[in-house]
Amino acid sequence: MTPVILLEELKKFVEESTKNILLETKNKEKNCERAKVILGNLPRKEAETNDVPYIILKFLTGQDLQKAGAPTEAKAKIRILAVTYSEDRSKGYIDALNVITKIRFDLLMKRVVGKCFKLDLPVEYIVYEEDISPYTIAEMVCNFDIPPIEQEVNKWL
Image (tube, rainbow, N blue to C red; front, top):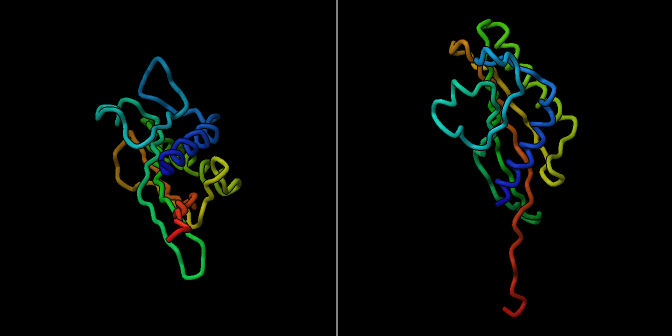
């Protein structure tokens, strides 16, 4: 449940972070729009190219750990993909970099998402080198400290 709540809170955070960024679309009637923020996967395969621009938030891995003498910890790794469109390859590259950089900046400034998910360094980001024009993809991988599950102890044992 906690990874789902993290993704939902991160979605709100990313929507707020990118609300003023207008990006080119394939739709000739609607030149620019905000990127849609999607959890997990696109709803259908054709959306990969038809629904651009978009940002996908994906849970990658989780980890529960406890070091000797320390409290229980829980961590989650999240991938953020920003997909942009432009017939101008240079503009598409800059748009994707701009989106991922804005999200990165806001995460590093605030460090907390949804009042209980703390950003943990490192934050890694990249713009893909592959030529898939007119599309460009930028990616960021973030680690978050999430609330751990505390063991219930039966005091009568």
